[in-house]
Image (cartoon, rainbow, N blue to C red):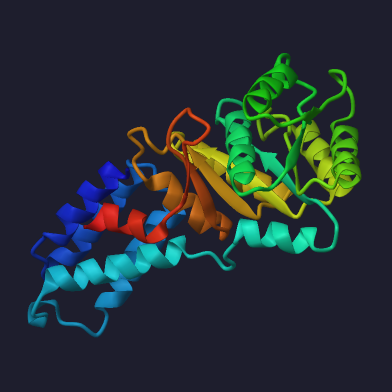
Length: 297
């Protein structure tokens, strides 16, 4: 996890800095961050805060430059990964259910990010918490999408509400919510189309789904290996639809760690889970402190 960033920060902390070499070191760090999937605004934020931390400090007089750099980087990265609002998913679901209403989650993400599999993982996670759910096959555009969702949900024993292809996705979400109300189910999981975020019709479609289903949570599913592509997707979905939380997939692969930092910085909402494999149990709560430890320790 975050192997590349770990090497970058480790090497930077080990540098012997002087007043003269600080600017060069910061410039080098910034370029290395760019090349390791950290978006420009995020890298700039890290480096600007590092420079700011040295103001009023005389580097040559620091008794332990390495410790100072380590603690400063830790504070900066922890701040980036700390959202404006934390989410306790199980607690939020129970709170909504106390009003005899299902908790509705809409999932956003482009094709190939692992969105459908992640939905099944969430359904499985909820089932293990003794919470019932139903899925809405809201991707009525891509051939095979309904069958793919049904396959995964069958594997975790979750019913799928579905219509014909090319039908109105918002009506599928509406029927799923009504089904959950009638059956007293705890959660509705709404799948959506995964066309490219530059597709204006896609965004209009998503806005209608959100307007009709009135979700309690909108989750962006991002591929942690996609780097700046994942960040661009998150920015577009946030701009046109809104995002309440993130889930990063393929985190078990050789991810550079930059996507987590960049998406957190850009969306200002929490990463609530990470995908760490193909199995339905391979979903873990995102541990901010462990992530920071892995890239700095």
